[in-house]
Image 1 (spheres, rainbow, N blue to C red):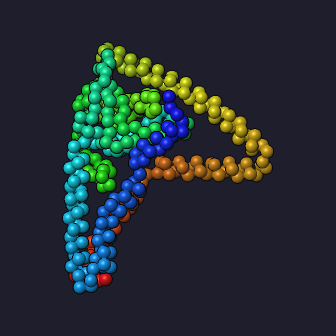
Image 2: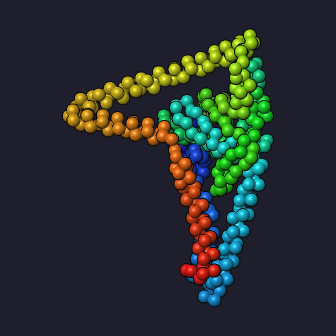
Image 3: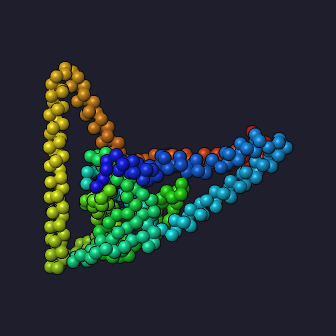
Length: 328
């Protein structure tokens, strides 16, 4: 039995450091701070603490050590990442409609087969290097999980070919890896485990489904394939029925909120209602334009990640100009 107050405190402690989804802005700042902080500290010490006759020598030592340190940090992070099975920017669909992407790192032996179904699909327990946080709209505290139950269409190696390159945020650095897998995960339900919940998922996008779509393109279904397809459709219909049942509660709640909104608006002047409706319509239009706008090449290039690299390059340029031209 979960005690609410104690449970909230435990979840808050467990949630510290957990992924809440991909955030390019915060990750770029983290990488810039991680790379520039050692150099800035060493440079300030060389300029303020050491005697003037040792400033140039100490600054040169700090600069060389910083460059070597960056190379070692990156090499060490890339070596560590090689021991994991990366699923960068894995896209998760949750029952309440939220969609969140996580950079998942699965250890080489971090998955365990639990069950095999009659259609050949299998259920795996999959462990992650980092914890993931998910805040459902109707729950007062987030769900923190470092493993999940994945239903795969076949065995692990046939489902995930890991034949594509990808980039993910690892050890405060952006790391590229030649063997990645882009997946989509649909959370079907939450498996209650006493003091916490475990997501029960179906992997709906992976190498297996991509290869099957290409292989079956333009081909007529055989009788056996037709039966399998009909069974799959029946399962999908059952899943849709379950979602409709869940949406009934949301629809009832929405009707209640709309009724309250109508009562509130009826007591206010019509001009205020018109202003509110016009503002809501403008927000919806602006959200639609932003959501479906195609990003230009300049928008993709001029981002905070590029800005972080520019800061590093500027620091290197200033150091070189300091030793060659004596500036500043």
